[in-house]
Image 1 (cartoon, rainbow, N blue to C red):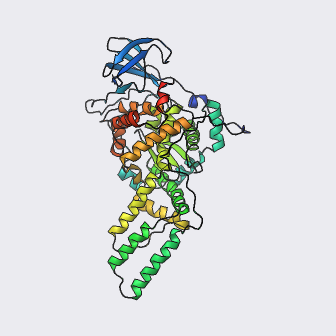
Image 2: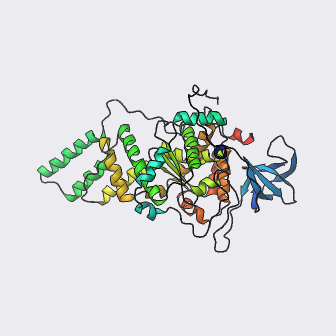
Length: 453
């Protein structure tokens, strides 16, 4: 891996409030969280620094209490009362048990990304399938979201200001940059043949509901050109994001909105799809979740944002969602839904898709399904791959990939009964499975970051 030189100095430097982008240590907490040593042997350091003296050596499954976080270190107390620091991947947080009837009413970490301590109540209701399907598109909120976009130049200026030095990191699993093949047949042209087939069936008297259904399935399954796919993604993004905003508006914190756009745009610039109109926002919901709509629209909840302690953790969460966009994970789900629907309708009108009709397709889809695709479970491997991609994007963007590990550890502290994580648990693999995968199948080159302060 080698540093990539920054572009020439910009004429204007974007100034971001220090309170929004400073890397602040997490203060000590009134509460502690049980954890177990996860490695065969772990050194407890006197300070959050590998060069600091060791105050204790613990073996696998030794018990300790986590009292706070400083960067990629947890402040801990050992069973015999010694205090010190261990790395976030040296231990594994114990899943919190159900606390009475309140489903873990407190979070044991205080993030510095937002304003104060993360809390939850038993009444937390996440953005579920019903309200995401029924929510109306909020044009005003969508306009505000898009107005907060950061340009690549603004993101690079922020990177220079905060010392995020880009690196070259190979990642073979990433969807390669797509280019339209010259002379490739568009879906519209391919459909001309299907329309001709329908006409022949009608003229010869062989048309039937069943025959028309078969052609309708073929119609929807016709392979699209790269140009048509990109057009549909671009049209679907605002339709779906606008409906999420209809269910939960943007959080009224402009510094947070600016921050996620600068960090998100910087991270997205180090993917194979840097030219998408990347758009990021924090929505006003207490649950802990994040959403990635096709075409570059990424939204995280206030509950998630407030859990994050520094810029690297913000980048880690955004990186996971960015990967879903890069890999077209939700777009593929939408495409499959269209084919399945065609197979169950014996007589159906042709759905307008492809080419210049992408907007009509997006509106038709969003009218029928709203934004509920955002809470559709993806393949487990897609989620594991997005964690892996997030690590790579963090490294490429100048952050330590262990930031993702820290985020997942803190989410674990909420426990399996947490109301704040109810929707995320429905759509993602268990958190300990995700941590195990990072431990055993991390992207090449990521292990070296475990030994960096």
